Length: 255
Image 1: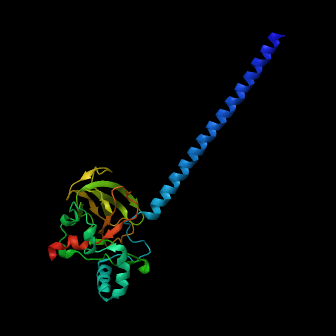
Image 2: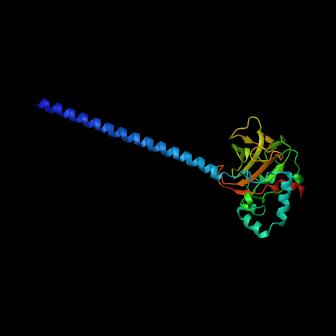
Image 3: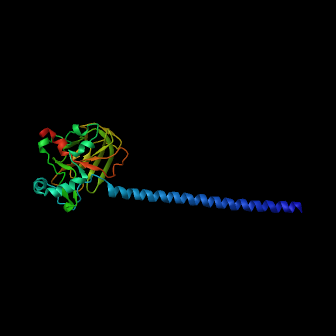
């Protein structure tokens, strides 16, 4: 009788062990699926956020094609644009005077070189405040006109944060300054210099690629779309930034 009871007890314990094993296995499996699903959703949201907030993009394809004539027209338009309208738009950008408080201590901006070879300061045109998308936004960059294939060089030393291709900017580069608080954006490149890679340090004047018409640049108006963006050390390359007008720093030699 005692043997029968012991046998029944062993069977009961075995059944309990199997049930506990099934419960534990099911719980672990559910947790794995929940974590994996959350990671996929987070990755999807991250990619979507990059597309929505990426700074420094060139003008959208809905804008009139950029030519030497339209660049000149934009400059003339700035002279006749109402001052109140300009003041309203300038609130979200950093002018040379207002930049003093946020200027990188490394003085990289004070030592910029024109990022297109053989372009002189008096060849530059200030299109920073030119309107885009029917006045919905500002250009917040300058377009440096040059023949296709002209060498594009680093305006300041830094580290290549991102090598990127997009419908608007075409072949482009995001380079973070040595103090990590400024991003230099180069767009519409015809091609990159051989061997460039993300994470690579570049020196001032180092060749980055060639002037082109990739992205939404007009085929008959090759140029470099160049912008300077003030950021923070821990911000990602695609997060919103404060734009700084490159023109005064590049054209200083003409003063």
